[in-house]
Figure (cartoon, rainbow, N blue to C red):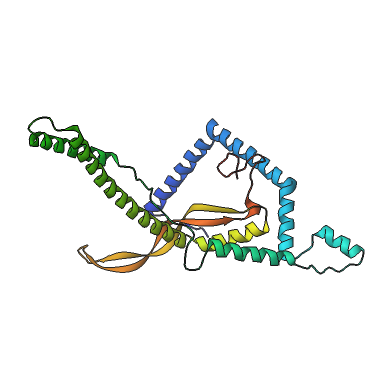
Length: 276
């Protein structure tokens, strides 16, 4: 009994395109630049991992045991050796939870947020506004020249220029304040949709348990979400709006486990080179 595989022209076209893509990817990976970059990253990653395994990982494990109320295997063996009690008086967890509560009260007050957007006290005038001011000043100077039937007094020209500049500054400052309020709402909406609260509470748990904590943002994720879409009739005209499910890309906030954080020995900031 033989089996005959049947493929449509579209299937053949997709397979050929995928095969060409894989061949192009293979040719790219063997270029000296790509191979050298891969070797460099692997070497730096190996160095960072070895440095963490030399002592930091052991300290993190000890912190996790203390927070969970457990003795280390070596300490538990010593206790059993002289017949002591293996009960762990878990005062560490009590103290850590108290610090978490204090930090939450300070950084996450109920019904409020500990941050905001405020425009600069003196907003910068955009170039197109500066050009408009210069054009308006030229018109005003011409009118003043006609008014005084000759050369206008310099004090009058400077006074008119000062009034025009102050009016432009008030307009620019008002727009800057409105944009700051709008950006504050945009960022707050992104934080809510991006899981800021959950990630930040996990971050507070880490910072009270381990020597360090890591919070990553923005992390772009494509997820299925409900959005508003338009229904169309047979002629293609929009009829009504209805909720539909689509894949959207949104910025999210993630807590990174201290066990997955691998800085090199001299690295003191995520912005420095050698941070994995």
